[in-house]
Image: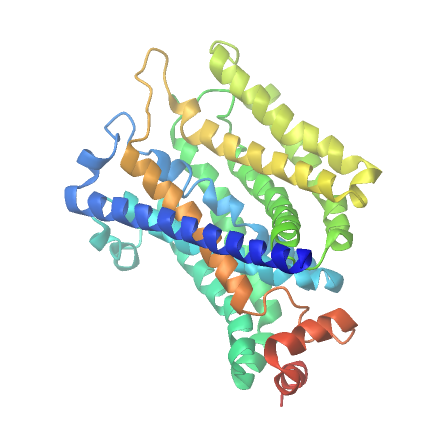
Length: 405
């Protein structure tokens, strides 16, 4: 009786969670509609001083590296042939697909005349970093869509498309890494234009390289965060042993990032560094809390077996990435004695709605599609994997998916 009551409470809690997420998405959709009806000038606090606000700083500049788990884990599993990490690939692809799809939504909202967004395909400006990012985001979103079709094809038993997608798996992984390298670094190139505006704590010629490196170790940390949360709240398998492999890779990338950041700060920065106490504090929090502390945690042997420590370290990395992107795109841009930008209610509701949509769609996709199962090409199925596959698809369809004609 107690177990049955516990299950009923879990189901009710799950439904309440879905309803709350749907409510937030509806609020975001309503705020988006108001933005399109009344325009940017009325619904946002953007102006000539702040032409980029929350929608660019979070929905684009921050959301793009937060969706980097797809290309990072894809490279590690497919290109470097660490096949045991295969169960982590599909959830990362779903996260990346949803993340980039919602980045496109954020870009359309931020454009003054979104109907003219198609002009980026009509008039090619090879000298603009915005053109490169636009083309790469569209191309990478297309690649992620094709990769996302793997679980869709399995769900509906589309054997021929499934065979084609498997054949293209490695080329897709390489293509995704190439495209992501381009636009992750070019996001940093944007801010090299702001020579006299971005504070010296962040402005340096190596900013594109720093953006790319931080996207790599943050993408792997997102995989850890995601796997830990779905195990805790969605009852998915415990992947802490696989995550231990990622904890060995992340500190190497973080060490390179710290070296590049330190070199740029000491040798490439021009002008005063300690003239703005608030910005200095933000920089210290970003580096210490968001990079140094998790770096030390990832170096400890205990993190290989401690799921809570893995979650804490990954969460700190994500916090540091978010703060870094806001420092570069917003806080570090503010001049002394300048009016501080505060997002409007409409801007805030849209961003909350986008975050809620990402969570909602991920939960629904994870529930109704084979996202957390081992790759169908793997031959070393364990009994729990086999049982979950049969429970989801039925014994006959499970056998067909494992050995398609």
